[in-house]
Length: 307
Image (cartoon, rainbow, N blue to C red):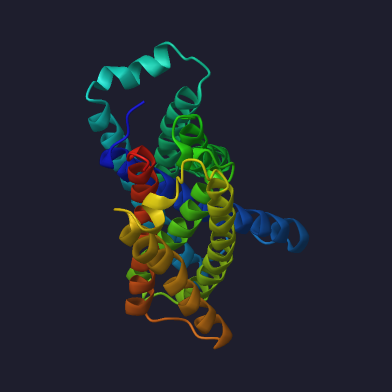
């Protein structure tokens, strides 16, 4: 099993796309359930008068789903380019093996299908039946999105010849990083909604969620380092702590992906402030750089010779 920079970029794009789609779908399904409850209890019409809050949510959803779909397709193209033989990807479907690679490939394609159904409803003027199809696609797509976020870490763990990937915390690290990067995509999309009311409330809730994900990510990173470092015979962490990937690990992942966003978001939440569009974009960029550096470090340091 060979890994390259293209695989690291695929892991980043696929995980980020899945994280953004899952978080936006969970929010949309929660809103749909709340509206259904209000209709039953208070007799609100099935087609209520559009509100500023609903307009904000609709515009933001369209942007997030479009960005997620674009990133997922770009990630799949990186995967195909790394394979060198596109037919190898096709063979995974005509001869499924039950392996993690086969499971992940099916999850990728089915997630893309769910995204297309959702985008058809969000971007086009379609009948009410498409709304039900879109809600179903969001619910089903959440399952595939979590599979995409998790399976990459589990896939790396199967390469038992690589000491750095043996930790049982690797899948959780990839999951939380994907969710944090998903929050960053949503924050970036809010920057294109500055003219809409209630966008600051959405941005603040996204920052609150991202803070929780980053705190958990920091804890899992510590657990990952501890469990990998326990294998003192091969020193698998040397490439991260002081080797050729030290800058990417400390400045890229730890600095940009954890410390800077966490300090900034806690300050914003404690001060009860919502960042401006520019500040939100810069904060999201830090998170995304950290997520990319994590994948580059894990793939690069994992296959580098251990000394």
